[in-house]
Image (tube, rainbow over all chains, first blue to last red; front, side):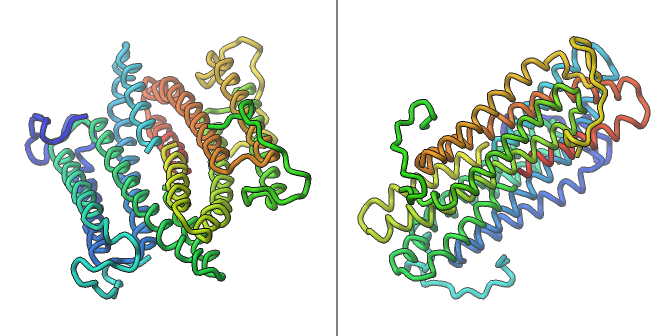
Amino acid sequence: MTTVEESTVVQHPQGAPGPHGYSKDKDSHLKRLRRIEGQIRGLQRMVEEDVYCIDILTQVSASTKALQSFALRLLEEHLRHCVAHAAEEGGPEIDAKVQEATAAIARLLRT
Amino acid sequence: MTTVEESTVVQHPQGAPGPHGYSKDKDSHLKRLRRIEGQIRGLQRMVEEDVYCIDILTQVSASTKALQSFALRLLEEHLRHCVAHAAEEGGPEIDAKVQEATAAIARLLRT
Amino acid sequence: MTTVEESTVVQHPQGAPGPHGYSKDKDSHLKRLRRIEGQIRGLQRMVEEDVYCIDILTQVSASTKALQSFALRLLEEHLRHCVAHAAEEGGPEIDAKVQEATAAIARLLRT
Amino acid sequence: MTTVEESTVVQHPQGAPGPHGYSKDKDSHLKRLRRIEGQIRGLQRMVEEDVYCIDILTQVSASTKALQSFALRLLEEHLRHCVAHAAEEGGPEIDAKVQEATAAIARLLRT
């Protein structure tokens, strides 16, 4: 897993299309993630204020659902751009790409 | 769902045991949630830096798993304190508590 | 895990309340499970008849959901009977029961 | 959803490659599904014999996991054959295929 600390990715010039297909949806992704960050901070306040457990669990379900929606958006773009691109190119690359995508879906399912 | 804005819960004096059984684990809960908040901010940096989709999805799976672990801890405390307490008290309260807990588990499963 | 082969449980006389709280709902549980068995056989026919993958996946989702509903029913009864019973009895048993139930919920979540 | 009753698919001559990419893995799929069917019948016996709830829940988790594995196999083949095929063909078809696959993944995640 590439954690932020380890990542040494080259940053793309602002507005330029990135290499992974999701760049044009960057703003919408960041907006979603900031909303999720707000939900997590909301959870902290709920714990601090001794809110009733069941209400906290409801908020956890909402945050998990929001994370899954974000993942599905990203996955759709990935299939459309990276996987489809590999298919157009032809060659053995497509098998590796499909396997990689399926492994990512399996990880999402197992959580 | 009690959102933070709507909540008008009375704040308990620092260190005093709250009413919902999870107060003694408050610090550990808050530590977990702050770690999850850090993961969500990490996701934002990954999107900003055009990190490869699959690596972002792996990080989403990790965050979802962390949220589920937090939920399971909270649920365990809830069963131990609120549900068990209602059972000790006797009366019809226990049925309502069990139904409420099961509905919360269903929401966690459906996400 | 107790598999059917390993199980050496004593069978309760027909109609007598079993020890685990779910016996009175036995018929409804068996009806649900037979319906799920029918869905799984339906999946086999779909594969044999080369039905379109996406339609098969939709049927898999329906079967998984039906299994989860069955699990939630069973869990609710377990909480109401075994966990609440342990709480009424008092003593250290309740901690073990709650831990066991939480572990079962964790297994359901991780699938 | 195409249920078995509604389906009017033309059956392919035995051994001939079907149209959806998964035909060569048919035997392995059917073997998996028959094993899952056996697990569901095992669950019925467990309920009939009043096996302890928690052991039944463990078996439900195993069956759900087996269904998810089957779904992932099918999905991988679908991506490799149908989605990649649409990409090679070019044209607007690929968008529809990717959207359809993502919707199927969303249904799997939400169960």
